[in-house]
Length: 193
Image (cartoon, rainbow, N blue to C red):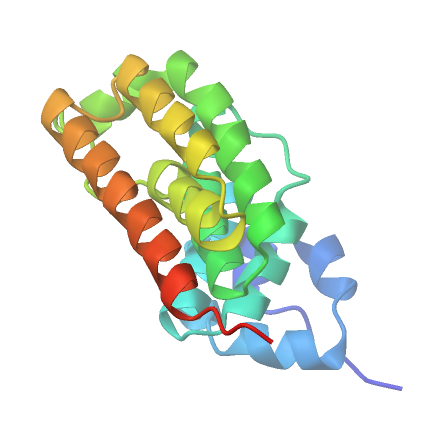
């Protein structure tokens, strides 16, 4: 039986003692690596910071585990969107593509409600890296091989103002080339029996 160390001050500050007590020895040890740099200002901030720190360490499975724990918390739409952005990156790194895809779709549902606030928080500019946008296309094309769905999603991104016209045209062209290349690769690797 594992004797947990006393509850760290960071856990108490973030009001996550109950969650901490549910962790097994392996997870307590992993968490211990990141506690010193954790944001303890709120439960959400804590989970986001631990996901971020462990993902930087390429400890994606633990990052996704922490995100799974944090998903159950109550958050406003903006907090949920920011939380999901970190969680999508963790899921991608952990190769949990279906979870990444469903979290992307959840975020796209939230975005219209927070778009003005989100843009204002980013000095009126959409970040170049937006996981709910970028990783969804990655999964649709790279994992699901769903080019038609990816084209429709690019249309949706453009309508939602998540990409501008120039980026839209570039991405559509890139997808067309990618699909054509995939067809050619299939033709040239075919070996009759």
